[in-house]
Length: 235
Figure 1 (cartoon, rainbow, N blue to C red):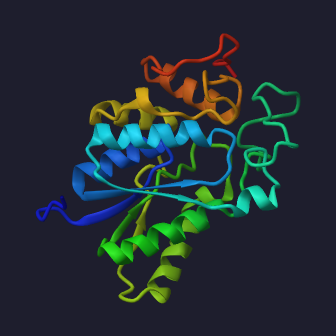
Figure 2 (cartoon, helix red, strand yellow):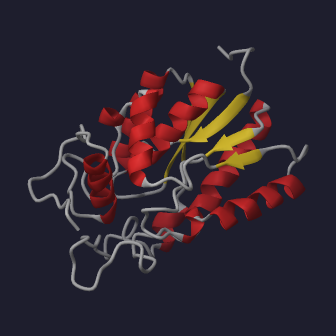
């Protein structure tokens, strides 16, 4: 049941580390509704499982799971095109964040945000939370502050009331700071999934795994999800 004492908000929840912390913040301060988008990514089943488990742990009852077929259809990303290999962080010439990697899904967050804003209009929510991170990230262009500033202008011009706002509480934080914040909030990191390529044990060598492992190590905490023995932490 909705909490009449809290304002409503929609949170985009992939099931990963960052979105989990973002959801914990949203659930703390709002009557939160969680949206998950499956888009044909390699680990979509595992991410959906994480989404449902995180919602249960955070007591988010209002959930919406949707599917977007366009990304698998157009390809162009290692996450959605089986002909493009997911790079490892130790590959020759590869440096995390230096260039936009092949794991970038073209304009993905615009699709996610559009769905979230549409649902927010129906629910009467004025905040849409997304766990975008600019620092210590793979360098995706749709994770930059300017992107969300521009998107908020579009929402103001293109929605009925013009009052919905996208909020990005993690965007300026380092990954280590996100881990520490999550631990303070009691975010269920044990239920999350960040790996780009595997669904049984995290590979430990893709950019997402490496950034996550480094963040937990720097925070002096143990990452509670299972990893392959080939994990890389000292890049």
